[in-house]
Image 1 (cartoon, one colour):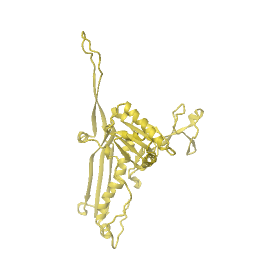
Image 2 (image 1 turned 45 degrees about the horizontal axis):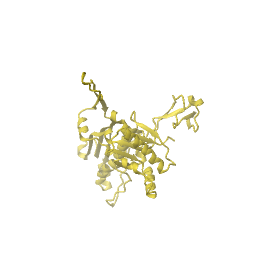
Image 3 (image 1 turned 90 degrees about the vertical axis):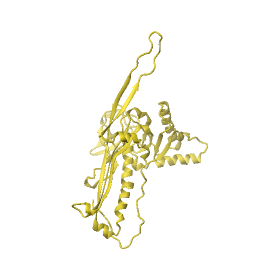
Image 4 (image 1 turned 135 degrees about the vertical axis):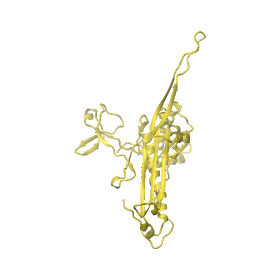
Length: 338
């Protein structure tokens, strides 16, 4: 992609930058001991241990014999992204602002690195095998509907003994606003379910999908996008409540408004598409998330052999995954696909 660096006769130091939030998923970063464990290998071996419960003690026989199961789960680093930015010396000089290249680095972090890191984190969590995912249409929902569903989630986690002190609710600003407005207008109505979360984090919808595609940079396609998925003939033998089915006509797929079992053999499903996430509840210790390697450096023109340019290189290599024994600590609500 060609640069576009405009020259100027006079300029201010005020930068007209695009709106963008900082990263919102950093609260899930793993503790330092996990980072140290993954320092020198492509994979992380995480021990799991289980022991049998108690049995009766009898005076003639004594103790019952139990067992210990000690095994490892393997987690592989799954994020390796980077970019190289170049700016010709004359472009920078004629623009009259050497600091434009410095500003480009901060813009890269704010407008590209942070949003993609969030989107990747939430998509990896939502798409992990075994994570419970509900399809909820809140397009016309009232706050009571959202609060009731959140209460059901927290009740389920409580019954499964999921730690309460580190549960985080990630939710879209739109749904959070509905709840806030309801609570303000109805001070006597209960919203105490929100107290079951150690933290509530608003996530812009553009970073909040159940699946994303990381674009390769080929054909000037950079960054990420919501995963489009592909249509496949369904393997269902009966209609699954809440699932979207489609019919095919030529190359066009149309959603079936009232699916019928008698026609199910002709229906298609949209597989692998990124559904908009309404909210996600995560118990922090269930997540493995850290960057093993981050390289960010600016090279002056004299260090480049073949180009008279400034160059900024950035690379991030890391992992987002879940611990197999802690999937009860993750719940996801997604909107139905259109």
